[in-house]
Image 1 (tube, rainbow, N blue to C red):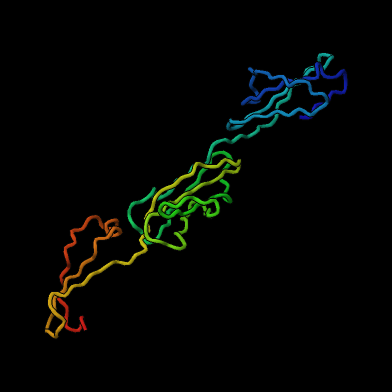
Image 2 (image 1 turned 180 degrees about the horizontal axis):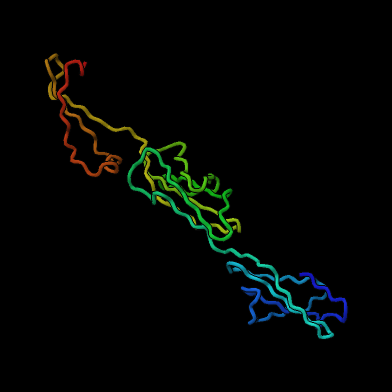
Length: 228
């Protein structure tokens, strides 16, 4: 605020101000800004949202009164909102590429400060491992994939500098090929036909894909050359 009085001088060398939510607001609780002593007064406000106005009232020693109101001053203390699709998953997938959506109704999303990281099993989040992502698009699957549980951590900022709550969800990556056991019923001597039992082992990641299995073998009659 820059205050100029060229006549009789300011009364008491003080000003009165108030924060209001409308420039036409008539009911005002004035706050007295103490002795200015030639200094430029500064007023501040925080922990509010939306449009606010600062209105100032001053009086000189001759009794002249002036009141002015600022243009709208925009405040944003609301955190960005994050959502991940799918919302976590307990089934194994060949690649982990969930989509992250970030919204912010006030200052807007800061697209340059959207970050994620994959954390394997019980490892901890590392400040050095944050990677950028594009809003409303899938994040990249882990670059050096290992089989098992990953946790996706996501954070974002808005243009006012508000940081979102840290959002995290579990996902499971299948980095192992199927395990198959083949057991011939007979011997491997030359015969017109052979019978063999084929087992797909009931490992953890098959359960996640298919649900519980009874491990009933699949019996296949094979020709002679299939074993040679």
